[in-house]
Length: 392
Image (cartoon, rainbow, N blue to C red; front, side):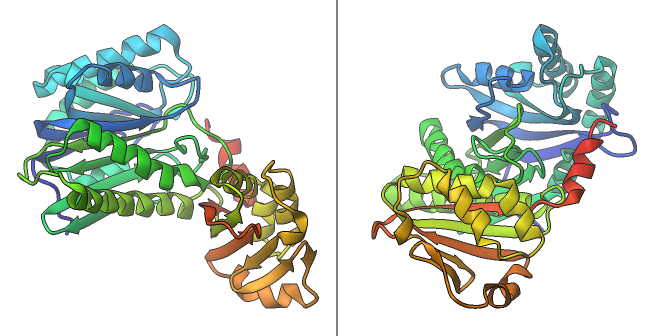
């Protein structure tokens, strides 16, 4: 049984925005107004809920009572009416639950370009009220799914510090906030600026280091609520670092599950580029490899095609010398100092490529500590099937 931080209630509803016979509306409610940390998509076509949430969070000393999430309709590419409907949805739910609409942070996921059916919001809000406290975090995690095949939940606890998180995402996954929704709750007391700083740093090390298909969505967000009801105050370097580590563990776990659930994916690749001249060089190299469709399809086919990895590295714009590069799959060196090794690479690497979790290491040979790690999925024909009929 999950340990839920103090002061949080959950509810879900079948509003029928786009789906039938399943819940597609969810709310996370804090009985005490909570400090908020948030990171949003960098996509210029940000969805209406992202714009509304950003505006809410601009207010000084802002606190929220709830996060409201719908699936099926992204409310992106919907212009002024989309903003209007988003704000109206907060009014509807706030009125039904007797909480201030401006204390509710909106989030949406689903098809771009379609408008809300506001009658569905009226219906869904009433069901949310009826189900308040009768649902748990698992119901919320399921309600926010789109093409996901399983709910993504993570809890990390140490002493009196508890952080519970959920996420959705399996396609349109790419660094720049990644492409997913994630919501974290904790009952510690922590200042907003510290919470925001920690979240931003953790997101950069987790959700911003995963890739499925190289696409960044319009609705990405990670939001954390801290309501202070445990009486545990996060202050001082040691306590702050402990809290940051636990948040990292939650977000890493959720990021892993997103890659594990990648649309059409069968493998999770753990890539590290090390000994680069700079972190930026390592980042460029890692992202070029992780986003490469040819690398992904080779790994799906369990083909130790080092040429595809080297080709991606070569176009990455990272600064390195060819004759210093070494490439390993698992513990097998398949490319050393700019040349393939003289051995049966396919046979030696085969056992590693058959695993669900594959380790790839690229050493740029600069004898520097600069490195960058990513998780990414392979790519199969199933990805095309899923996305070729996404709006059907």
